[in-house]
Amino acid sequence: MIQRVNTDLKKDLLKLGVKDWNECFHCGNCTAICPLSENELLFPRKVIRQAQMGLETSLQANVSPWMCYYCGECSDTCPRDANPGELMMSLRRYLTSIYDWTGLSRLFYTNKYMEFAAIIGLAIIVILLFAIWGPPLDPSLTSEGGVKINSFAPIKWIELGDWSMAVVVGALLISNILHMFYKVIIKPGVKIPLTTYITELWKLPTHFATQAKFRKCDAKGKFYWGAHWLMMTGYTVMFTMIVVFLPEFQVEKVNDWWHWQRLLGYYSTFGLLFGLIFVIIGRIKQNNQIFKFSHLSDWLFIIMLFLTTISGIMLHLFRVGGMPYATYYTYIAHIAILIPMICIEVPFSKWSHLAYRPFAIYFAALKKEAKELEYKTNLSPEAA
Ligand code: SF4
Ligand code: SF4
Image 1 (cartoon, helix red, strand yellow):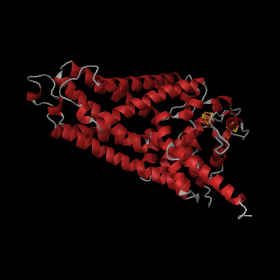
Image 2 (cartoon, rainbow, N blue to C red):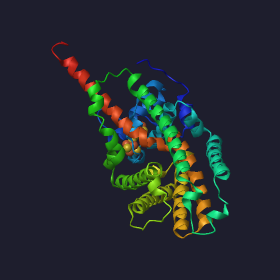
Image 3 (cartoon, rainbow, N blue to C red):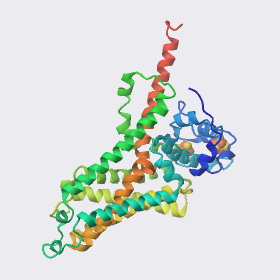
Image 4 (cartoon, rainbow, N blue to C red):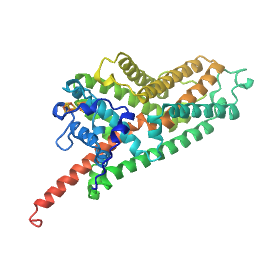
């Protein structure tokens, strides 16, 4: 693989939040102490070296930043306060901006005005769409019979909007993953048999659903894993319900509280609130290495998710309480927060890690298998 040295890489990384990592004198303590570092994929020291030397090609082919779950043990014990854990976090931002071929990820990570403009712009478009096509002030929706949610927001229009958004966001994310595949596997010239692609495929859904590597962290890390897992499953359940099962989710008649649709909604709300409160308190108090540094993208992600959750809870309460106007206006506010959050955070920012992490684990397994195969081939009598 031809190596490209980028002498401006340090400046690039500084813009993405890296601090103090140039203090590293390569004692190796962080790699020795990291509970997730493995023989085949040593980190974080190796990746720090690549960053310091401006080895851009190697850095972009390296998936180890996604293997780090930021338990903070390496930063706690680094003799030079070089913050290796935070470096891994910043490198995840760097890699996200590299995989994203549109350049929007880099723009949002490095220019807060553009990110705010995109969020507010999308929110205004949503409000305008409701003002033009929706009937928020139509007296027939409030005069009798309580809340008429499906007359206010017809299922077929909301479903059309949901699926359009899911297709666009999915296409962007998939194209970024293909770009990641090119950087990690194709460009370095890794030769992988087709059967290996298939036999290792189970790692993708398994690591997405369980985030099992996270559990290898210390006791604090296990609690963080629990909170993160609740938040992730809460979000995934809610996303599936509002996109795939919208006709069962947005029904005119309010179901009994034990109905599966409401129970899933309550689980999702509990998971999101539990995880969010844990993260917000941690980031405010900065009582743990993992919450010591907060990039703007970290705050935007949790604030938007928190506002979406709270507006969703209020919407539910107004609807169950039979308050039409409060329900309709909260519905608009809820969608005006939800759409920019999904359209910006999922393909271009923090949420993309939900896809990149399992793919990084999958690609690392492919590379490991390819290496073992090459080793066996070189040892074979024919090779001799
Ligand atoms: S980051 Fe710190 S612990 Fe890791 S190799 Fe550098 S000096 Fe040592
Ligand atoms: S933060 Fe934890 S998982 Fe990440 S490199 Fe440091 S010790 Fe390893």
